[in-house]
Length: 217
Length: 217
Image (tube, rainbow over all chains, first blue to last red; front, side):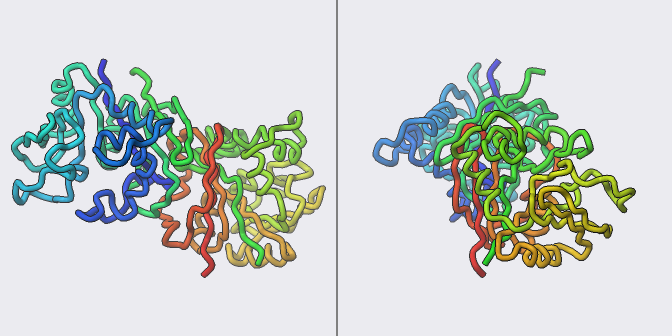
């Protein structure tokens, strides 16, 4: 059975998955970019985004590569798609990632506000889902044609899927940074009670990588 | 100037410093003992508690040893001293640690309920402080005679001292365990805004050790 996976989701030492005050200038909230330092230098990230001079291999890169492999669809929260709130004021906003986003598969964006799909270059199609997280998962499963689905975030979206017990596997990278405030990933979510166990834990100088796996029901 | 230090304070991956439902059988709450696995095998811990067959050296032991060195006094929250709540029902309870506790210096226990000091074997004297965290710190400073003071916990006590900006240095050991619920260390405490920076971060297979240092005011 294909999985709903969270990969490469970075949290601060104090448990925040994004900084406060997301905006066009700070897509990850103030200070949020520091969460992702572990991935920016990896070969996988640099190849995927066409930046850098080759990138590093090793544990950090292994986790980045696992996150990118075998995916048939993505699910994103509205805030991960963009800083726009409320009804879509115009159709100009097409995500943070330019004309050829790094997904290359169907991407289902959770929103309260309907919008026609957007076909991007490179195989990415943004679909806007207004009828909730289970409907989005069902549509993503169908689109993924037997491959895994990756849940990209943000924190609020992760928390909804975790609370509903729908995430099969979650890889977090705990970065050696403090945010102080922002969106707390774990508050009020009892992972063991939801059936999750910690199945991997390995540290590099840039992150502590942890994998949680949900026991089969 | 002598410091108020937190050392070897263990938290779970989901940010809890103790498990739920503390009791005589579970002094650290249900599941809380797993938080401390990194320290139990160290030479410092085994020598201090007279257990084991020598113990390990290395990074985990280095942090344990730093936590034990140079101390002139300790401060403990009431719940770290024992499971008794409310007025002291009788004078029988003298802490979790037997007749010769591992402190060997004056220990100031925060409580709402007055009690006469208890002189234990080996130099430990438990003093009960009813007039608040600043008074306890002042008394500990005087008793420490120029040495550092260690703040032992639990979580509620740490949170009080952190919020008041009174902790100079804090070493946390993030253990690869999940608790799901319990006492959340970071919730609502904005460490960067309080002047704390992350000054060390080093991982072992058993813990990610992080040190936060408060900038001089």
